[in-house]
Image 1 (tube, one colour):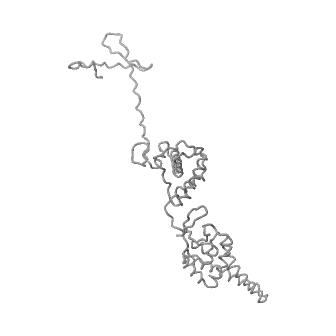
Image 2 (tube, one colour):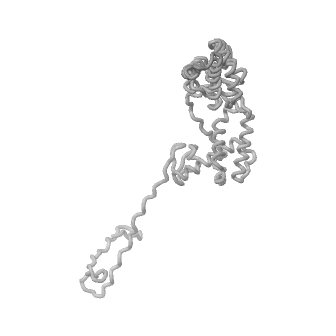
Image 3 (tube, one colour):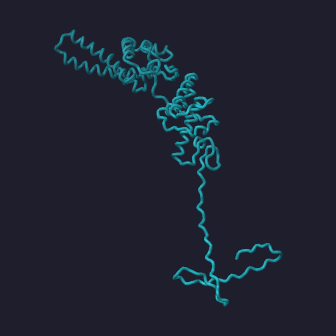
Length: 334
């Protein structure tokens, strides 16, 4: 592992390529270059048969330098450090600060490579790579470059750390509509990598992001709140709002982030759906009172009904039996 520091004081961890992978990449490049050189040479010999020996020698030397030196330099420059062999092995040539190489870097590597690779059959390049702590050959040392691995095992994705509990819900009234997606992405990347940054550089970056976020929201950063905690709290508020828009208003801010129960009681961080309100039973309307009887005979009074419907005689109700003991004033229903 090689740790490089960029111009922004951010430490980058790069994996320098080892000698076996670099040797395999150089071998693939040489096989491709020599194959093209042989094909082009055969074609030129047939085309320049009428020329004298000096002309044929000059043409052969020009083709050699062009195909074995010029073409690899052009390919590395245009592909930003990836030749055919390096592409097959998952390698790339970068500057010492981790940036892409330019033509001058490829030119120095190519010219010195003629001596340490072609003229010495790669012996000098192998010795220099074994001696160097980062596996660099002489061309890399003079050009200020480094060959690194691009294909790395995928590690766990960093998660945004939660803010302090005393900041939960404090920015619920903040207007986040004017914050662009690029700023949100920068804040999330900082929060997921802030433990890997230099403390001073990380603090300065947090202050700058907090100032940009405060300018977009129109509300200054509260006094006494660290910039990193402010960023985490605002990101949590945005995620809570997104959750409420996606799942409804039953999702609260703390529960959406896994900080406590939501809705009904339950384990911390578990989502509990809002209670389902049962429909009320149908209203029982009072029965229509019986019409008063105008006769004293034995006929029972009838209940008036709607027009066209015959009246139904009412059933006589017997009075309840007298309760034993002292009267309580309560008459049980019939």
